[in-house]
Figure 1 (tube, protein in one colour):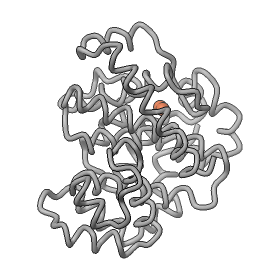
Figure 2: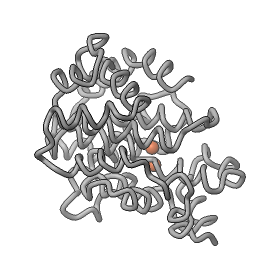
Figure 3: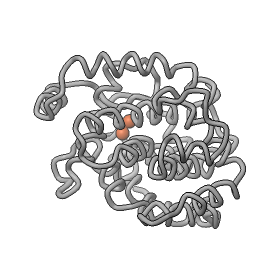
Figure 4: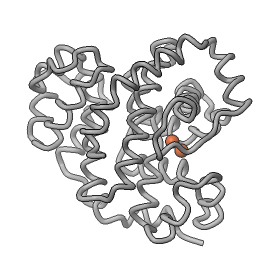
Length: 273
Ligand SMILES: [Fe+2]
Ligand SMILES: [Fe+2]
C-alpha cells in the first residue's frame, strides 16, 4: 500500500508552487480582486497568460477569436471566469511540463467535462458557472497525480474499466481522494475541492452537493457524448435518475454535443493531440 497523502506532500513540482500561482489562487478566494490587479498578476507569468488568452477564445465562452489580451478576456468574460481559467491554466502548467501523450488525453477529457459542467451550471445554477467550469477542469487531477507519482504501475490500468477500484486496491486511495489532497495543498477553495472529491458519487458532499452533482453529471454525460480516451465512467441508472432529478432533458444533451463538436479543433490544438 502507498502513502498517497505523504507522497503528494513530497511531490517536487508542488512543493515549490510558483509565487505568481500562489497569488492567483489567493485571488480566487477573494471577491474584491480588481481588474487591474488581476491582469497584472496573470501577465507576470507569460506562459499562463498565453494559455488564458487561448482558452478565452474557445467557442464555449462566446467570443471565439476575439480575445487578444488578458484585459480583453476580463472585459468579455468577466473577472470571475478569468480567475477560474487562470487557476486552471496555472495548475496545468505546473503539472504538465513536457509530459507524455497520455497526460494530454486526461486534460482533453478534463476540458470537455469543464465545458459540460459549465453548461449544466447555467441550466441549474448551483453556483457561479466559472466555479463549475474550474471544478470540471480539475475533477480528474488525481489521475494526473497518480500518473506523476506512480507512472509505471498506473499506466497498466489507467484507461481500464473499474479504474477507481484498481486505484483503491493498489494505492489505498482513488483519484477523487488524491485530487482532494492535492487541491487542499495548493489552497483551492473548498467548494471546488468538494466538487472534485465527490465527482464519482455526490451524495456525501453535504453543503456542496450542488457542485458535486454538477461535476458528477458532467462526467456521466462526457461518457455518453465524447469519444475521447480519457473518459472514466459509464452512463448508468444512477446517472439517469440524477439527470432527471436535476430537471435536465435531452435538448441539453443535444446542446452539449454540438458545442463539443465546435470545440473539437480547439481541444486538439490546445492540448497538442
Ligand atoms: Fe474521475
Ligand atoms: Fe473524469
